[in-house]
Image 1: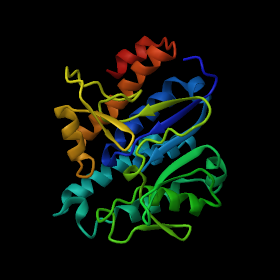
Image 2: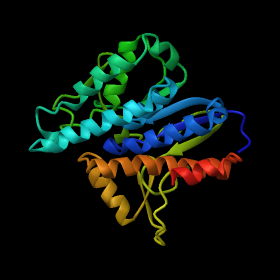
Image 3: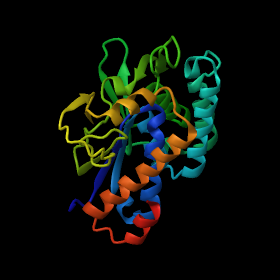
Image 4: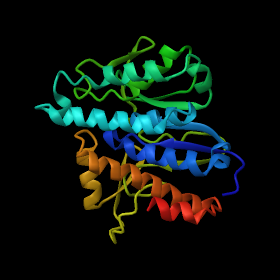
Length: 264
């Protein structure tokens, strides 16, 4: 990789977003010089949360614990996350209101690119300028609003109704400058993703996200909105860390082999 600046974009993936936290943790632990070269961050739904966490330098351990608690609560309810008392977006909103700095919108403007889907014509909108902390949070909530799963009514952002950005562009790569590095918890052709070791070369595209046709990916798809046990989520987070180490070693002349061995 010879580019002086990069862009980093994360796919939407529901509860599998804990994989992204493993990716973010690895980059923060082992590649600060690489992160310093990242110009823009992008994402849809859970991917936009990961980009926000990385850009705002949020505590990744606490973010991971939050996801695990959220998944545990969903699993205790009769209908899981579909239970009317789950209210996932309200929980996420309260969390962002608490952990984001008051100048979050200033830090995000021009660097954080959030994918939204406009309800009226189902077209994609990328938002990268934010007027206030609340405006930023509204964009994050709109990007992650899955119809009926998150609520009956769509999310409103700046007076217009939007739903999950992953429904129109699940892995935004619209950046005009620099190489874009893609991250996905699904095995496929993303730069950082699991390697299922399958001889099957068949891929399908989920709104700009490459997904290899494997049994492992079918399982991941089934767990994106209905979370698995905590142990499985923890392993997904660790896999994100390991996959990122491999990427750094291969593409960034990364030399800390001992760290790679420890994380395995």
